Image (cartoon, rainbow, N blue to C red; front, side, top):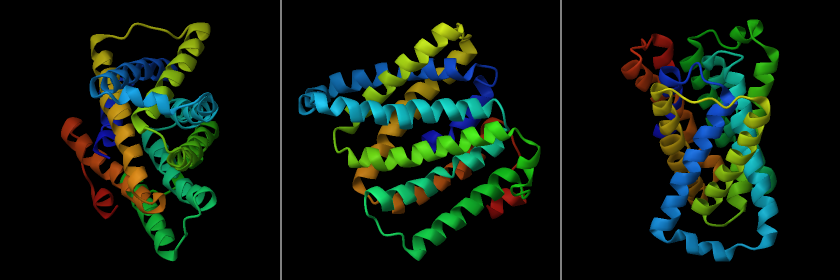
Length: 262
């Protein structure tokens, strides 16, 4: 949650003028290298023997759904709508994760969990919209909003399906990022979007690739292995709250009454 909360302020500080697909390519390469080093240094790489050829297709599907497609859609949406609106729509993913957990994992959808999701999501709206609710979306790009919602569906379903794929999460996540780097790299090559980052942009890319992607996503995947999806996803709503305080510290943004209510 803390690592994910650094995404908005760090992106605003270092990467606001960087192409979204190029950002995905560089950050995925860095995350892949970092995770491979972890696997080699810890000896976890030996567990790759547990995988068979039959595992490649589901792993590729998971990597495409929850890593490449989610990130590509979300980053693209950030270029089309405000970061506040994107944040609200992105935090539909825990709702979709709970729905998916009921379908694929047969977890019970209790009234308490439904209530927790509703209250948490209302809090996100207050924190990010400053009390304006959903009225802000009326003047926004409909396509950008659609991208965000599809991204949320992808990541919600991915969290559940990845939990069902009970293999080594360090190896799984490494594979997902290698796949994402390859797809994003091919796209950037043929679209001519490859560019050399400045020193300032490299700081943001390294932070995103190492701390947010590699470390944050693996820790979250490990946490999902230890708990019910429907219970754990409610904690994800703490992310915009932590992000709010980090933005106040790093960007000197004001924390208003709506943020406190949220």
